[in-house]
Image (cartoon, rainbow, N blue to C red; front, side, top):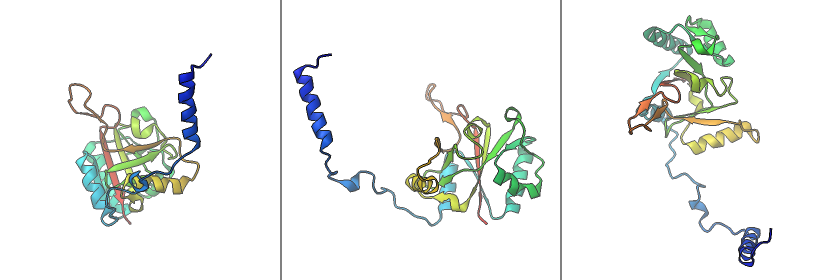
Length: 211
């Protein structure tokens, strides 16, 4: 197909421009530094405040005994008989307590599911999940109630810090899916009425273990 002289002239200018890259005039204004003041003190409290503001349920645990007791109390209160967990490290951690509600059975029959996470973002109250976790892609989305067990060392201040941590952990082999879950699933597509639990879990719990 013949290209018109005017179009060829434009394409030539584009090619020339691409072959001669120029430095950014204001490099510090292009996302190279955070606009938020980083405060690594009290990340637990900051996350709890932001996560609770988003209708998340936050539970702080100072020991594994306290974690097991809190999980059992929640299961008793909700009358859960089948809570699914397929993460080996969490199953090993909870095994000594032999929680009666814990199951590794079928996905369709569960009342709730327990997973781990990659990181927690304090500034936004977000949970970073990835396809590299043992729970995979489906469980955190499909479950009606999502329970996350996390550790204090997984807290970061901002999303930017989380991305840096993920790159440090996985290098060039980043997981094929990295998700930011910020509170329970919600939508206001229909008549601007907020509905919770449409596209994912209607309740999200974070049990933060600080040993």
